[in-house]
Image (tube, rainbow, N blue to C red; front, side, top):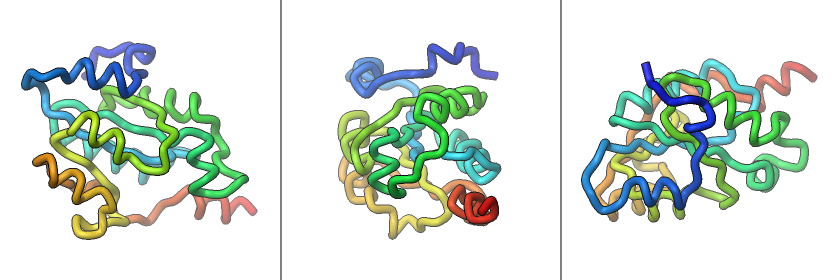
Length: 158
């Protein structure tokens, strides 16, 4: 079991970059998403992503980037609460909230050994694949089939 306290899991891109430094250390896996109305598909994705390396960093879309991506009625759950939920998982080592439309700046800054994406992608369709392969990292497709989504849950609630 991980020994991090919840508050210690919250980080920034600058802090993670400094932590990684120039020396070889634990292999880092980056997973990302909105994680609005957390469901079993999210859990299975993150558990599988954590198995791809030594430490798992989860980048969570900010409220602003979620609205830009999902529309004006999203997210349902505010970013700080989504980050707290994800940070509470024992498989997660670090959580950061990002405003950008994608994780390319995080990938370029941290160069994680693995970029984990959900099963709604294939290695060929991951938008950031060329960035990851360009610095020598690899893409991993993780989790169970995309049978769960917050959008679907919201549809059922209506």
